[in-house]
Picture 1 (cartoon, rainbow, N blue to C red):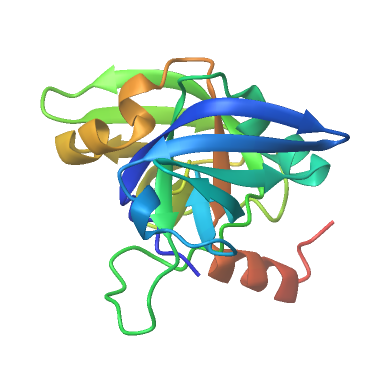
Picture 2 (tube, rainbow, N blue to C red):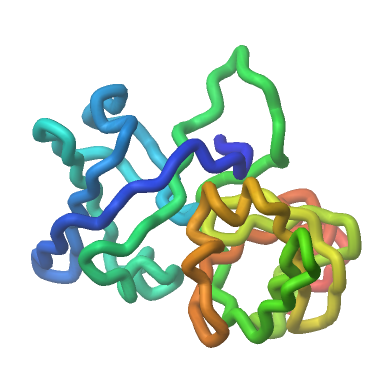
Length: 196
């Protein structure tokens, strides 16, 4: 389980294709603390560390993961948000994040609010993709509070610290992001019989 609090970022160093799988090799300031078989969220996608060599480590994404997320669009040099699993005795600073991306969204607007930024996103319509104002959403692995909410869109506000310490600083209009909707909302939707 994750909390959506980005620890650091990793830089994509190499991409290797093997059948329908893709092996991504990253460098990160926390590589020395990682272990093989450890789960780490990359832009909100839970991936298993399969190899570590000096400052680099490798994770593997299967075809289903590549189809459902933005990982297949990554280019060498791209920065991804990283979070290790929450320790059992750790603080719960974000919200419940599983590392299971529901779908991708598209950034449709970036508004400079003179001290913060409003990012607007659109996503496919589904009864599972529920946002509510002041509720939680995970974007590229970052736990955020929903500001505006609609059937197929929402917005969030980003403070300067989050902007500088996540890949929001590189996000542009038209970019694809990974979305994990709040697990509580998804269960309520299913229990209410809203799932189509």
